[in-house]
Image 1: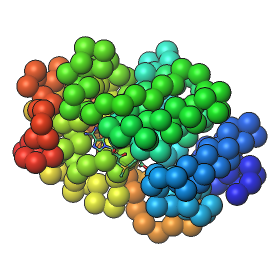
Image 2: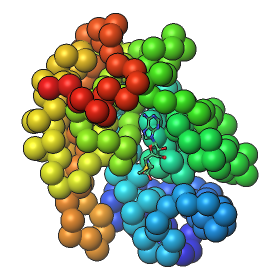
Image 3: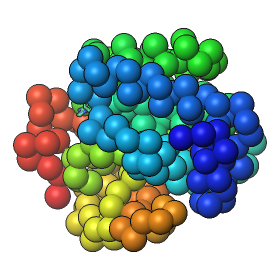
Length: 243
Ligand code: SAM
């Protein structure tokens, strides 16, 4: 992978990256591949997959976030729930440096890796924290504090809604990065989303260069405060998802 290939790939999905941003992603690739030898961070280790399925896929959410930023007129606070190796949060931060980013994961090793990447790339206004979404959703420093709450590949939509919506401020936005079944997933989760104070604004199809599989962003508006019992603790969002 070269800086030029990263820039070309991003251009194919309508995103302009300068040489420094492409260089940061390249360094991130090196750190990811190196750390993956020590512990399992990602099943994708070849350059083409990392570029398309990690970097570009993460960046498909950028236009939605840029529109939200234009409406807000101020730097947005974004939290990436279940960030794993830093997806989508780190590529989004590299492409949009003014974002204020929190990367959250329940696994210590993954959070440690994200902190290493932040340090190695010299990124500012970004932190990695170890927490569970169900717990963070009740902590005053996280509950209803974020303008944008995003997640990729963390849980089915009704469970994910209970992880994400409590963290969004009223007037904020949740973005679930999903596959081809997104429209049906959003419909199945409509009741859960309403109980948590939100409503689906749009299911936005996105595609990656050279790949046929359809992807989509489920964009949810947070309309009202989330009722206090949510998120339920002790694994309930996963074991008995809201209807
Ligand atoms: N978002 C990354 C990506 O797209 O590559 C990682 C996806 S990985 C399949 C799911 C991640 O979510 C894991 O790193 C896991 O530790 C984290 N996770 C699962 N449930 C969580 C929860 N309730 N709170 C915080 N993190 C969670």
